[in-house]
Image (tube, rainbow, N blue to C red):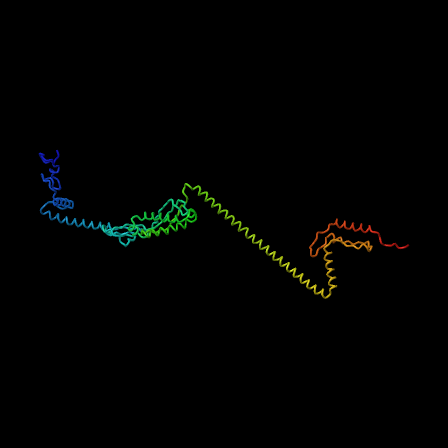
Length: 394
């Protein structure tokens, strides 16, 4: 049966018979609320004993009251000192503090160093404004020429406005990632696959950086993008082998083009030199022919004047010059055998050395065997003819 069950023979309250209850609940069957004044008085007496005072009623009450006032003052002073000391905080050189006063953000930003704030009134949230933060993104995207590429990039940024970074956007870093994906898809969608996987990645990275910064400024995130690096731009793994073959073919094409250019740079100067040499030779031959023709015309004009003055003498002179020129260039020997002169003089030295031509150039020399054969033929011809000389009488 419960201690407070109705109809019980006695009061079984476990707190009713306690004589040392500090709250005064051990007095018979009194089940009312405890006396607050009495509890405070007992606690004051106990504190008085701790600090050397006297407890009890009557004359000791005034002494206990004096100690209580002094103790409360000490406690108040300690509380004020603790409150004052607890308000100090320190910001590093790379941090700035965003101040909230009764929950409202203040435009003034706490600078680095030892600072103080009233606890319960101001709250300070430190923000690192010099640390370079980074974010990465990788995704499959569609290019302008309807090809799928696997693009990954890294963006590095700084917090330049701590108030906007903390207050205006709930999650600025998540907003940066979403804006980064949007800017990247816009740039990749306006580019060809050759630009993404080739040499156009640097220009694409600059375009993504400019577009991303515009988005973050419009959102008011307080973030400034420092660099954007397009780490990888490649086709999906399923078609990687085919694209590798295409890349090798392009490299071979570029190599062949470079070799052709090198060969052209070698051959073209030589051809130009040969062409210039041929032109110079042609010009020299032209000048030579023109000069010779001019000279012949002048000589003919001069001969015409002389011919008009003395035609017979000039004609004979021209004939003799022509015969001399013709006979000078021939190796034949003319002999007069009708006179009966048996002494034949052959210019063997000239026949052996060969006749020197005038205008027609040099001829090949006659060999000694040819000279010998000619001499024998001449001698046989002379001996075969009858002698025309008459004998003298005795």
